[in-house]
Image (tube, protein in one colour):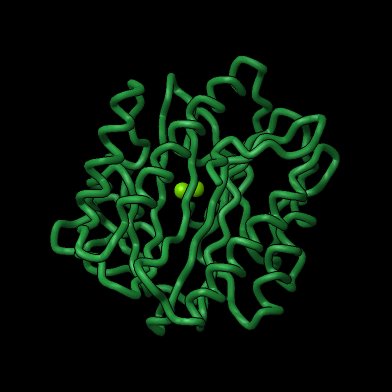
Length: 271
Ligand code: MG
Ligand code: MG
């Protein structure tokens, strides 16, 4: 959920010990998402989900890297919650609220981060609240599939553009669009490390991210955000919640992935 920026720093290679800590952080994130999936039902409000996430984090002595995250605007409010809960046309960064009661047919995106012993796991999933329509089901299926094809490319010797292109292709061949103003990222000691991982490749080569080569020990948060209509976004008056400009539906799936000698390892796997 990183806003586009261009200040390239080197891509960090995590040591064995750091990889173990990231595995531990990833497991906590996975437990939270699995738990919240069971609780996300009609009549439940999104603040209840945030409270539950906070309980699980504290059980492990972990904290949320989202809580207190600085706003894009210097004088804007810091993020006030431990998870992001975004409903329907909300794409990312939705603030959990008591008044946001889930209703039958809602499409809920939950984004969870855990900071454990200084290392971060980051994952998001989309949940159908009760029965959702066929278009929402299709959007969920395609977005999850686009994450899967991206993860498959997180291999030693692979390159960034070869991960991005299949994500975009998967989404666009099904008639949907990838959000362009927010993107995936390296992750580790910081929630947002190099490289930036957009979910599209610009036609102009010089506007694309550096086509870095992957090495074992790199850790990425791969996170396609996919919409039924325009990829253009707006930010609500709370200065956090990002919505589709045309109020079309949005889905979001994200895993933290480690590049190993033996292929990608999903550190936040739970299903
Ligand atoms: Mg992320
Ligand atoms: Mg996330």
